[in-house]
Length: 124
Image (cartoon, rainbow, N blue to C red; front, side, top):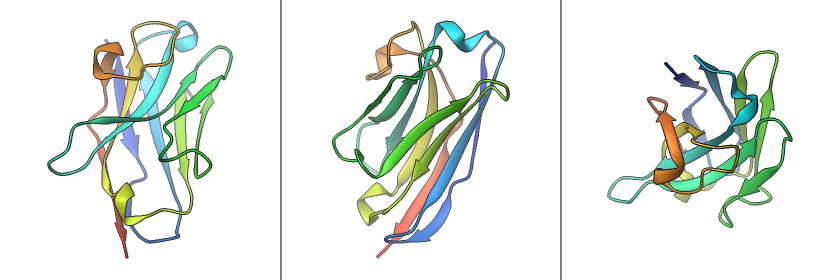
């Protein structure tokens, strides 16, 4: 059974940085893609970034491109989301996700399993 455990959320001022981590277990992830989604209060869950585990190809939403970086450490089975130049509109619960295939999970139906979520709050 796949297990995803996020960490690294918190409160930060606008312009600051945070790094989220997602420790994955229960599967050989080299044949899958991993992603980060977020959900703000009263809004739908939205795609943030994804990475194909074996090739390392990445994909970002337009709202975070150039500010966020997704990466993975195969030895630790961990995916990271480095978030720089944070804005108040980045405030949300961030969820780690593993896709159903090797392609980037970009919508919820592409996701096979979710983490429990970690809160990120950016103050102005």
